[in-house]
Image (cartoon, rainbow, N blue to C red; front, side, top):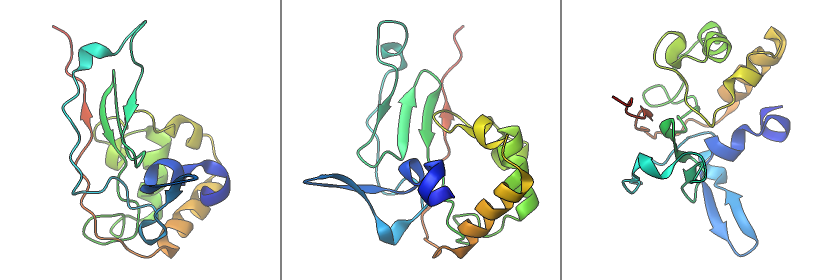
Length: 151
């Protein structure tokens, strides 16, 4: 489901640019923003009506917009840098609440968590089982950063 229909790979898996276009890095499925890639400093005053809506990197794993800077997290089952320590209940809570770790900061755009929140428990459990089936990838992704609030 996640691989073919939900579009999760589009942002959660780094891509490489090839002559026909971006291709998934098959060795890094669902590993998120590459930890060694630095983003340029993008001023937030370029976003808004009649301005830019969002900017992304070539991997499509980092996004900057009026909400702040979003980094796709490592969802591979790596114990230290991914979801290896998560259980099924936590995974479902995260997608139902839109909160990092189920109670932390908001999950930022472009992650459409509100669409996943409408899935059945059986679908979410299947998604979690799929993540567990992947090869663990050690990749410590920086935390997403909400935009500064206007004074």
